Structures are given as structure tokens and as C-alpha cells.
Image 1: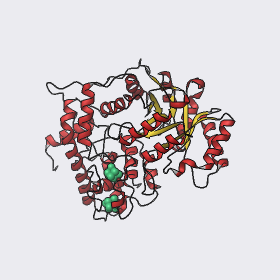
Image 2 (image 1 turned 180 degrees about the horizontal axis):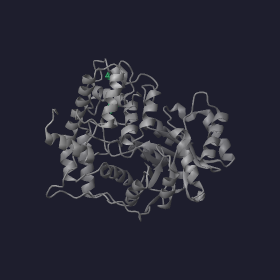
Image 3 (image 1 turned 45 degrees about the horizontal axis):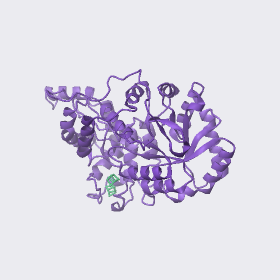
Image 4 (image 1 turned 45 degrees about the vertical axis):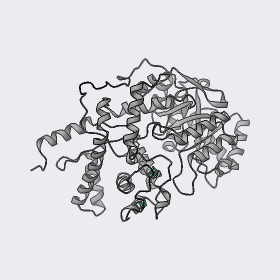
Length: 465
Ligand code: SF4
Ligand code: SF4
């Protein structure tokens, strides 16, 4: 006999089918906003986002990418989850001409997808920026080899920019092997410009995003950079953008929509596939089924509490899908003319058709108000990429922000395998340390995030069975 009333079951069933996922925040990118699709109440503002998608839309705005002199589309393409070359071609056909990629995205799969699309694009009309992680044992020779590998996968003779992927200290900006390799490759016509990316520290010995990227802007050797920038996380980005403007460096944005919120109800008699897998993982680790279910329910309750807090603006603005807030977040980024292109991780045609219409358009007053209310409601739920403010409070040096970022890849980008692989290879202590911890980090987050329950939740999510 079910412990739940019929109306509760019906509510949960509808919730699963139509849950409102809001791309905005999340404790670690996994908390969730959901519940049933919200019926538009009398007097409710209709959604201000362009739905349905427009297949006839085309990029309307191109901006000069710093000293490269390139006119790049305000909406660019990121490629962390990219595996399909057809999406690259589709974005190109809509006028997107900036493509960000990296050796490490999908172990070269993203570069390969762009390479497969190359013969269908006018090479002279697109800007390709790739990059690689510089390892301790790298020198000019090994880096030249790795760039040649990127060129091969990209099926091109040259990349417009090749950068240091995730430079985590100011010293990393002066890696002699990287600069010697770039000098050689520029002389050969294989690389035109240099770049750097960073989303902030994962460990206490790493510098802040602003410290590294402002130093890179002033360094004089870097032509473009890739930084975190969204309406919930832009203070450091604003400083970096100002430094880039002063030094005529090109700016490109990642993580433009900071995550996904979802409330997933738990019906013990009717668990979802994901919940069932969770229970199996936990029981496989020796936990009782009852304890695993209670943990699942406690998580759901936290998510529900968050949902209730955000419900007023969800209803007011008629947010029916996660994409509506995601589009608002992207639209916010496009409003800054000194951010030259926003790299959007297009995974299908549909998303291209929804984002491209935002190009060159203004954020409306209602949209701005909605984002501000969202920012206030989610402030203590969204773990800032690259933040390390709570680091000193943890006796086990758990890299909270990094682990939360992996959860963002899992939930926010749907890149589950990638996120779990990253977590399995995490340098340092993972969140299993939180299981028996008294929670020394309580109160350490300046934004009010309750770290311990989030870390337990994320550990469950990301741990390979
Ligand atoms: S719960 Fe404990 S181990 Fe986990 S981050 Fe906080 S202080 Fe560190
Ligand atoms: S201080 Fe807060 S925002 Fe920063 S890493 Fe810790 S939990 Fe995230």
C-alpha cells in the first residue's frame, strides 16, 4: 500500500514530466528547481524569451576581438560536450564564426567534430581557438607536438589562437616551453595568436581567476582569454574585462548560465531510474536500502525548500522550462559590449535556434528584473566557479569549488560521464571526507551556502558505481 495519497502521486507524476528546471544556480549545480509546470496565473507576465525557436534567425552583431582585429559573432560556440559536427555546421550557417575548443574536451573529440565540419565552412571566415593543459614535464618540443595533434584533429593548417588551458598561477603564464612553442608555430604560420583560460582555483595554492587573468591582460603576450562570466558571478569578470579593455585583449565568456536547479520528488513506490541507480550504488557500498532512501528524501526536501523560495518569480515570469532562464542568462552576458563573444555549448540545432535570435538584441526591463530576483533568491545556493573562500576552513583541503564545478558539468551541461571521470581523477581529497566530518566549513561561505549537505549530495552524484 502506498504511503502517499493519490493526489501526491499525481503531483509527483506531473512534476517529473514537466518539472521546471531553472538554469541559474544550484548548490553545486545539482540543486533543483522544479515542481509541476506552473500555470500562468491571471496577470502573470508572459515569457519574455523567444519561443518557439526561430530557424530563420541569424547573428546580428559582430565585435572586434581585441588586438586580433577579428570581428567575431557576439554568440560564439563552446565545445566541451561537442561530439556532432552537424551542430558546428548549423551554427556556422547562422553566422556564428567563433569556435572555442581544447585538446582535452572529450579527449580530442570536440576538436575532431569541428574538424569534420571544416570542409563545409570557409576557413578564412572562422576563428578557431584551441588550447591544452601545460604539464610540468612539457617543453617547447612537446607543446609543438600537441598543437600539431590539435591541427590534425581540426583538419586545418593553422589555428587562429592557441592558449594555455587553465593557467592556475601567474607563474604559469610565463611557461618558457609554451612561449617558445608559440614563437616557432607563429613563424611557421600554424598559430596566429596566443590565449589563456582559467576559471579560478580548485586548491589553496592556486590563484584567483582575476589575479591570473588580469596579470595575463597586462603581460602583453596574450591576445585573447576565456573567463567565467554570468549574472550570478561577474565581479571578478568585470575586473578582468576592464584590464583586457585597457590592454586591447580579446574577451570570451564561458559558463554563461551558471547551472541547473531541479527538484526531484521521491516516491518510494515509483522511483525514477536515476533514483533507483542511486539506491543501488548506495546499497552496493554497504548502506541499507532504508538509509539510502532517507538520504534521497532529505535531498529532495532541500530541493523542494529551494523551489518554494524561487516559486514566486517562476510564476511571475512564467518560466516553464530551464531554457527560458538559461536564455535570459546568456542574454545578460551579451549586453556587455566589452565581452566580445559568449561561448555557448551548443549540443543540438534547437539550442542554436533559441540562442542566435538573442544576438544584437537588448535585455528588456522585465527580463532584467527577473534576473535580479533570481540572483537574490539563488545567492546562497550557487557555488561560484573558481571561488576558494571556504578553502581555509576545511581540515581535509577538500576542493569544494572544483567538485561543485564537476556537478555543474553533470547537471548543468548534461555531461555526466565527463563529470564522473573528472571526479574520479580529482587531485587531492574528494568529498568522501565530508561523510564523517563535523562540518568545520559551516558558515565559511560568504554567500551563505550550506557546504556539507551539498558535498554529500555531489559525492553521491559523481561517484562511479
Ligand atoms: S564538510 Fe568537512 S571535509 Fe567537507 S568540505 Fe566541509 S570541512 Fe571539509
Ligand atoms: S565559499 Fe561558497 S561559493 Fe566559494 S567555493 Fe565555498 S561554497 Fe562555493
